[in-house]
Image (tube, rainbow, N blue to C red; front, side, top):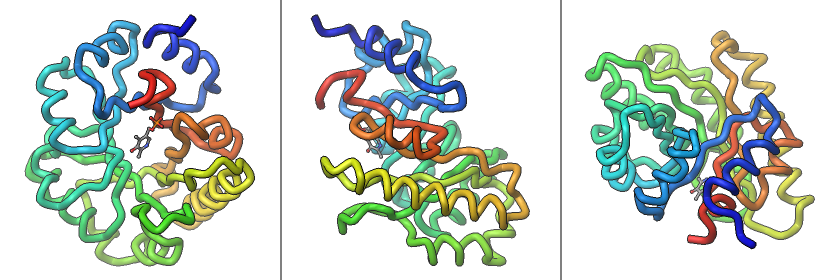
Length: 221
Ligand SMILES: *Cc1c(COP(=O)(O)O)cnc(C)c1O
């Protein structure tokens, strides 16, 4: 028999090591289904589209922590700046500067992850290792007071070969560790967002501290 949404959620939660945070990816799912996750005691959700996040946030309690996990356009920042908990998908200094500007307006500091390109596929967003380095050592980055970069996010190739996926996660963990060592704000670096339904077990073995899981809880979209 198939488990309910709450049943799947609890099974996954119990399997996660204590240091690994779970973001339940709610994209495409209606609020009635999301309510089942809330009722089961979990209130940390990820959406990949600004409009969908805003619509759902309006219908659900303020206690929900909203994570933006999809590509963010600068003209959409204003819709989420007041409440977003963590933006996983920052892939340029300009985007970070714009988030900073909106965060200041709302008198808050927005936590961000820098998205790194680790997959072989051309379509994935993210910074290269060189671009990441350049961003982190720039004077412009050092000036930002209303964003806090707390780590990295990456998506592995969507392939069946576990060896490829594992190598990509290894590469991201290595980058994460070297950034942490070299940065003056090293204490802030605590989040390595990697792993989704198909590959989160491998990601955890390779050092993930946050997994983003949708279909393993809700079923296929
Ligand atoms: C959709 C999505 C996920 C979750 O994918 P599942 O396969 O449903 O677990 C994780 N991360 C990002 C960036 C996504 O867009």
